[in-house]
Image (tube, rainbow, N blue to C red; front, top):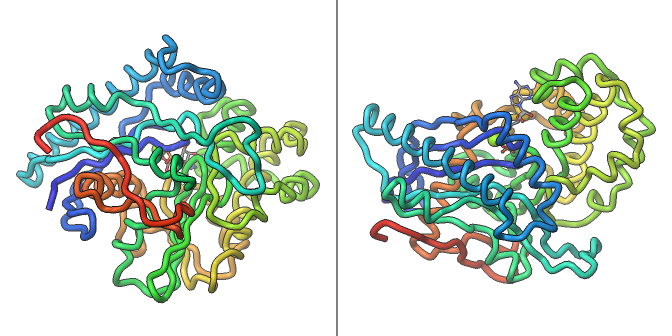
Length: 376
Ligand SMILES: Nc1ncnc2c1ncn2[C@@H]1O[C@H](COP(=O)(O)OP(=O)(O)O)[C@@H](O)[C@H]1O
Ligand SMILES: [Mg+2]
């Protein structure tokens, strides 16, 4: 087994999650400590701005390069801190890093939602070679582009890890990750996987909380719980073509921004707007569940959104079955995605497939990722 640190920085742009995992890419051994290193407010704001300009940004744009250097420095620090903790608490070392990087653009081919004259593309930034140099470790990175180049969605990547973790749990089971965007993994009774992004989650909520209430996010769902979803706005949003699109499908962090504007969200009060976004997140998840071959008996929820009681309540209302944080089965909801990238790093090192027809829509199981540095 390899001793890995997985590093994940999701579309919420809140920071870097790091987790130590012992794994051969198929089996998961010990799950060690984990931590989150938040971005400083300036880096978060700059990365948010980068999302808006990524489509026209060149690889050597000075603003981009400056963001990448600062982003990589946060990752170096996360690795150093976690490595110290692992040495102290487990007396263990690290062999390999799984470095997701920050997605600033995600534009796969989507049947029914043409790209126009744009080519399919997914872009995660971060300097893997610098991370390898500064830590002295091998780094697996660029997990998504081979899949997108082969016609897949490039996302989600974590289902294979959800399935490994859920080996002993009753099926059919749904695992929902509530990040900036929400993605679900459905695991059937026969172990088959179906996975896709359901719709927006914390991303638009965070933007709304910042713009309309001067907060980084709607802590504990306070705004949303004080408001009422607006029926007219919600029903306009429910007509978005993405909801009816059959999986495989995946989203860019900004895919719904225009629809939210056109639906008249901006006219709502801060409370009602937050309540409407929460309700829409739940509606999207319920619409996604209609694509499952059989209803899931249990929904396990990971990611920061599980800490938002308004979201959990809306999900329970929209899905007719129990919705629980992943902690009920002993998983770590803040570390899950980072742990997954540790496992995926081992899969890159062993040249095992990362993506599958049921997860990204790629024609056949496909390897991916690249390696830099160290001795591997
Ligand atoms: N106590 C909380 N109440 C409400 N929302 C929360 C809370 N804690 C975290 N969140 C939400 O979770 C987000 C971070 O989730 P995370 O799983 O890290 O997403 P990502 O994978 O996209 O980075 C925050 O931006 C915020 O919207
Ligand atoms: Mg995060």
